[in-house]
Length: 479
Ligand code: AHR
Image (cartoon, rainbow, N blue to C red; front, side, top):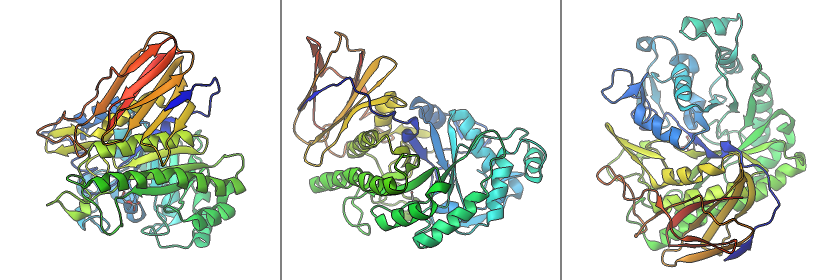
């Protein structure tokens, strides 16, 4: 493949496109992130040190919490105050297990403090009241004298926190209340009214958007509520086939390599079509499309709780991650944030844990390779249905970063980039695999890990990259 680098710059790739999502689901929050202060696993105020350090390394910019479907059954007052007094509830969505509420609002903000990232809280519309939502905002963000600010102080936190993003309901068309779009749009208008601005920071309000290709939902909600929102969500998971018949994460057929990637690539069409509908009501592209759930959804690992959504993660998932990030870059003018599901031990996780052991997945390494694109200007971004090579190029601080993904199972491929490059490659790194379900596990945590890449060459200011099959690489060259 041959391309020519132009001088033109596209929109900025918001760093929030590299966001993550952590729900009270399976072993994501409990065990995966929060082990409690008394755990023998090294922790700071209950947060696993190994996991926090790993997430900081990929510069996690924002973390969505507490769900997902869990959000519409979450009553935040159950999760504050002394832990021994916190209500034990049933996690009806995810395995019917007991939720002891030991990880609540204070613990979430402590986690964000350690990670150095922003808050994205999803409010409860399905089973919560307007008052409950308003009081949560007041509890978190009110500085002066008020009933909720005083309650926060009684619980040991004097200063308000910053809530950058707030979601008004999750999947309100499904687990969040089975609403119809016109009804939800009115409910959204009402609830968001009381997401008040108590502090100096404006809260970015996110409406519940469509599932996959429900274009009618997008049209109705935008037509009724667009002026009241800053963003609207979109959920799309990559599957190997039917929803009811999820393919395995390991030991899959070659056809399932292709079907999963085809499903992931549908993201391009979905964003294009939803964005066209949004243009009708928001031609200035003020409202962001927030892809706050994406990633591969595969069968759970044999022998694990089906309600915990624990799946292994292979080089195939790394391809899903790279391809999808390239698509988000292509649509950076409309996609303001995205949150891969989910951070630890659930779905397409960055990290897997078992007791005190932790392993970084191939998807983690893609986020590591791609972190250089955060807040950079897009130069080009490409991924086409007919090809098995996808790339993205951005510029920031005098550095051109080129990431590419060869998802052929057999063929080495070359990307020639004509431009005016100097004669130095500042950095070239990649991940690769010999077989299509190569993965990391607790016995072999470094089967797939980032290595130096020697496939990039500069000759007379022209760049030529030769990349083996099943590989993702990033090359950085000074402008
Ligand atoms: O990420 C798992 C679940 O998928 C979320 O709770 C829900 O929003 C979606 O259906």
